[in-house]
Length: 285
Length: 172
Image (cartoon, rainbow over all chains, first blue to last red; front, side):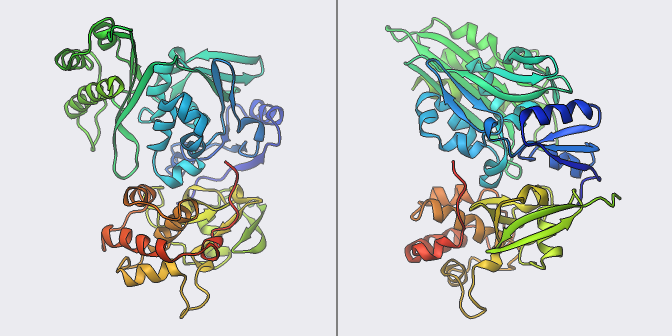
């Protein structure tokens, strides 16, 4: 199973990648780890005439901690995210998500930038990126741009990136101390993709009540979303299993569920409600 | 079909190779067709079964999901690098044999390279770590229990020399 023929370019700098991308904006694609792009090229769902390999750009392979943010370069692999000790200590949700992506082989080559730019509805990171309030960093012919995650995912395989823009990384605010998180996932056993994935971050007040609570869902619908009805129902309340279950039951109201041979819509909705409950309970534990 | 080719320089099982390929050539095809290393199997060719697993810079990758061009400047290790001869298997292969971790053998090269990568990072993995490491390798006949057992047995026997065959690891 071969992809359709293409011309291969190896970019040696971000600026070279950008000029190649601008030259071939309509017929070119960027190649990082290739684990989203090559499968769809083999199925001929994508047939770029020019492939611009950016995998050698070391400047996009850094994890940089600032005072209250961590910047993750687009080419950082899932493996690097899953095994970075400082990231595991400061943004454990990211490390937890990275460790359950696909399998060992996928994590070794797949990159965060590739996942985010591809916007597969079953990707894991989007759920966590929504609840962590991540900013996507891009650069293009009009210079650098910061895109809030809430505006980035626009639908099935569709993002706010322009065709001549290169995603350079994501900036993640470091959660305040006392914030806990959890990622719960039902994986497709063959592909490892999330049939449903739910990320929750919760902070508690001194009296134990729920302070800030955010719940993000991926895999269930054509793009990841925040379950604001659940968040609103639980914010400021005392943690209570019955109340969490009742709030989780509202998750899928009015949401059009994906449906495929692995999971009918009603099953996906039930799994989603259960994983929302589990993720919140674990983040509170 | 494009007549255009690119040149790929890579070290395969310790030997420097420079090979001209069509850009769309996948690493698995370069290994099997250009280098005649047919121990690397093509299975599903959609990145799910792991039969084509090889090591690139010491890390397990599915060679059907990697362009040959992406191996430029990298070190690739295939199953052929492990046994010294037909009668002198690598200890990990021996353990698969003894513990019945092999039945039809189709998934075996991939299973062995995925678990070699695990053992070179984590010489004494627990059962959960072994199962996590082979999530990307599908076996349809012997089942996973005897494969897990084989890796456990091998982990008691392998020395640093046996793990060195995995190659030099990329940083990070």
